[in-house]
Image (cartoon, rainbow, N blue to C red; front, side, top):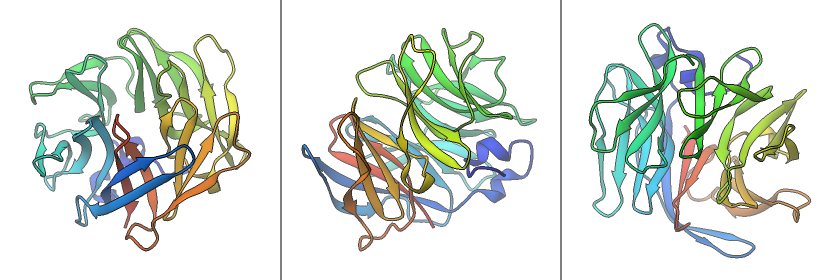
Length: 287
């Protein structure tokens, strides 16, 4: 396995569920200043030996994530911070990963690992109703992010892995880049996409704006890490171990340490997510 992706990428069609890593989701209050961030009241939200991963804030007080159901699948879970409760959106025999709010605010799109190993893009109503297929023809989707109400950027598993754009969601793909890794997100307040580009053994933070034919390689990532979250259209965070770093486009010359959580619990932070108001942060920790 050349990269450490989520199980949805590598284990489809096998007994991949039993190979899921043990991960927890930590949440904390977040204060963002011009140069720093402050992470306080950190707590382990999930605190078990199963797979809890891929957090996504639906709004300032609600977060979706992928959760090992303990029944041979992963389901989409929703945590309500005001009520302090977590519920499963809809129990399914398939496995769902990477829950993401759709631009209409009424659905959660996700990667669904289907019987036979197909990995396709689906969406669920927020009330937990019947899911619907967004793109029937693309069967190796690993990750996705919405660029606008009609367009998505998708990570397609292959040799090499490709970044593609589909518009509308059910259309055929247009290749934007190849040799990519799993970090993939829309840059806030734009239709630009940020992703991880591999060059040899080095991982680079890359961006691509609408109309551009070639991505911009912004900077090498911290120790080849691949997970990121953007605070604004020019400010991005990544983590290495228990330390969070930031990089500011057109200003930073290197990654700057902004938070050290080594005394707080998490020691192997991977994915990060921030709510729209930038008052909460979620951190995935490999156990």
